[in-house]
Image (cartoon, rainbow, N blue to C red; front, side, top):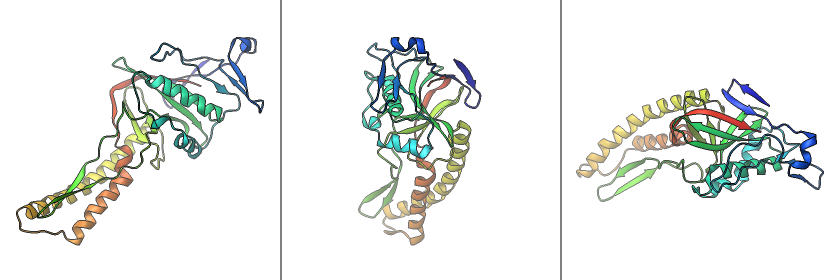
Length: 275
């Protein structure tokens, strides 16, 4: 059964359970009498080894608040595993789906096709407060966190660098998707208040404007101090200068760090969800 979700401009494919077909599907019965079934509309996706993706659904899976979904993602170890092309993202999305459904989180397997012909697989979660939230648990690999720029602090005899902090060693990401636009990720550890592509564009624009405004001032002054120190004309920074540096780092943590992820190189052509 297929219907259109105009909010995300995506195609949603929902599983349909047919009683006459139940004997032809792989069904597990838990000790609590909860049925876990591999019936329904399975995605027509094969993993790198040739085996088809198989989703196992939980009949009592439901929407949860985003904080509870995040707690599940944070406790799951999938993002700690380094990505490899031999495994592929289809396998990762399949495992996360089945683990989440087992714990009663209503989860979808998501197929993202790009205009350059490539495909990426991730997940979507039904939440009671934000609707459908896209999440990616792919570990270090195809979408690496770019190393943050450091602020060089020069003394007369040595150079030191203050590096912008990294929020978390987790690779769990919230995905922002819209057909015709590049897929973008935000770390799931950020204090997010929206999950639509429009929210992402607005928030990133505001954060970038505020950060770059302060950055131009602070880094400009730092450059002057560094030139002075390197020429032997000075060897210390003023108190206000240090306040500016720390304010810049704090602004980085609060505003810019959550958005410091790579984007897909091609625009999204289509998005399909299999619940």
